[in-house]
Each structure stands twice: as C-alpha cells, then as structure tokens.
Image (tube, rainbow over all chains, first blue to last red; front, side):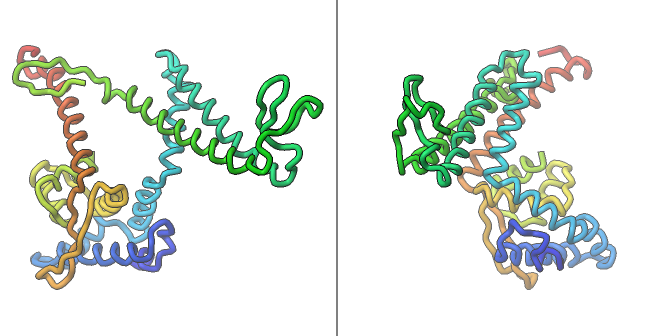
Length: 196
Length: 103
C-alpha cells in the first residue's frame, strides 16, 4: 500500500482521505483472510482481486477525476459535439450545433479579458454605427467604449454565466435525447413496466 | 451496472465493503473485483450519493460502513426504474425465442 499511503500516485485525493483508504483496504484484507482454513491462499486471492497498489491507486485517481466538474463539462461538450456532427445530424440536431457555437463564443468572450489588461484603450465593449462589439476596437472614429474599468468583471461574469447556462442546457438536451429517456415499452397487464 | 448493483445492495441497510461484495455475489451472482469496489464507493461518496461512518468492529479494526443518502436513494430509484424498463423490453423481445406468445 506504499503508493497509496505516500500519496504520490493519488494527487487528487486529500491526505486524510488517503489515510482512510489505506485503513479500509487493510481492514478488507484482514476480514477476507480471517476465519479461512488457508490464510496464505486467501491472502493471495484477495491481493490478486485488489490488484497491485499501483493499479489500485490508479483506479482511485481515475474515479476521483470523474467527479471533477470540469471533466464532466468536457464530457458533456464532447458528447454534444458528437451528436451535433455525427449520427445525430440525421435526426436534425441543429440545436446542439447552436449550443456548441454559443459555448465557443462564451469562452472567446472570456478570453478577451486577458489582453484588456495590457491594452485597455483597444479592448472593450464598443458601441458604434454597426451595433455592439466585444473585443478589439475596429472603427475608432465611430465606436466608443461603454464599460471602462468594469469591462473585465462584467464580461467575465457574463461569459461565466453563459458557459454555465449552456452546459446546463446541454446536459438537459442530452438527457432528453438519450435512448433511456425515450425508450418505449408497451404497457401490458402484469408487466408493471414503467413507460416514459 | 456495477455502480447500480452497489447502490441497490445498500437500499435496505448500511454495509461495509466486504458485505457489499458478498451481498452482490449471493443475491445476484455478480462477482465484483475488490479493486474496483472501493474506488467506486469513494466516488459515489464524493458525489454525495453515499455517506460513510467508521465503526469499531469486534475484529479489532474499524470498518467503514456505507449508506445511501437522500440523493443516493433517488438515484437508485431512477436506475432501478430504467433497468426495469430495459429488462421488460428485452423480455418481450426474447419471449418468442423461449416459445411463449408475444405479449
């Protein structure tokens, strides 16, 4: 259990949790072996089923990563992208494409806050004869900036809310279109099958 | 599937890891490797679907007992309903093969 207890194999897991994992695995080995007629054989069997400490640590790391919000978001975006560009196109998933475009636009807007710190007079929310424009000043003679020093906080918040909203909408769309949600089972007497 | 089974085994009472494995094996012939059980339990706990408590055991070492939280019970119910729907549809599909009349 060295790789788990020392922690270098488990960067996403907190030290206190690592200690609990080690105690739990040790207790499991003890419980599996105690009371058996062949302790050596039982130890070998449970060790094989647990895997090596490195393998076990790797599984904890993988499972821990699966709980990360950004990874969920990434998987949602990938799933939506696949639906929008893959087989989903046959079923008219244009709305997924719009979600992807909106998401990309949200991040693009957010990224514009970075150069604003270096070029405050060139980056901003501009209003001109052609309407609103977020980003680089393109028509100095007709455009004027609206947010000033509030550009970074306002745009960051707006982009953040747009990204969160889009992610939630993506999740909702994927759940709504998933096969399990649309699976149709005829309701028959005695089967008691749930119908969606 | 493995995650569904673990949640289902915890429906009635709190259990510790080895009890969950034995419950799955005895009640559903599902053999889950120990190496996959604890990482998944850890994730379900991190997701708020399970909660755990350490209990001093007669064996001389503490055991971590797991129980379903309220969101965990909701999720388990959803999974059970989805599985029931899926199994019922497959049952209908298999019925002619087994010689019965389609329902």
